[in-house]
Amino acid sequence: KIDNSKFFTIVNNNLDRMNQLIIDILDLTVIDFEDAKKESIELSKIIEMVKLNLAAQMSEKNATIVFDKLPTVNYFKQHLMQIFQNLISNGIKYNKNKPIITITATPQGTKQLIKIKDNGIGIPKESIAGIFGLFKRAHSKDYQGTGVGLSIVKKIIEKNDGEIAVFSQEGEGTEFHF
Image (cartoon, rainbow, N blue to C red; front, side, top):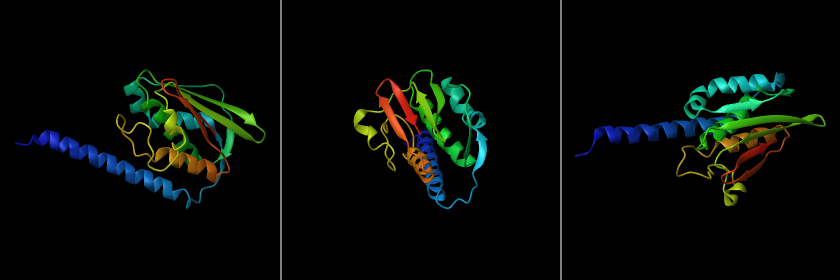
């Protein structure tokens, strides 16, 4: 006899994963067709909105986001939300301890160099080169995800004439620069 509650849990988890994958793919494809306008945005306000969106995840893991004075930038608000939400969410998800996400910004001519650093599990050396690839995941067995989030981040940044780099060491955390 099959345990129905176990069966329904498996089906429900798979439906949740499929739903998230569809949402991620839609986010990825809509980037090229958006008709948004750049606006002057305080990065600290973006971080506060992201904290609200991730409140449940942050509470569950007792996560902290640390940032000093962040600049005002001229960018697409929704794109900034997507970038910060994906990177911060990953820093919380891929962490076995109390996640601490640190965000800094440094002027680089007319642009800002943004750094988002976490104290998580890090990315294996052999996975770093392909981490921004579509459906690529460094820790697919132990953590849920679709492998689309970092592809979205990279596409947004590059579409806006930016660059992104990742620095990581297993067990030491990860740092994204863009």
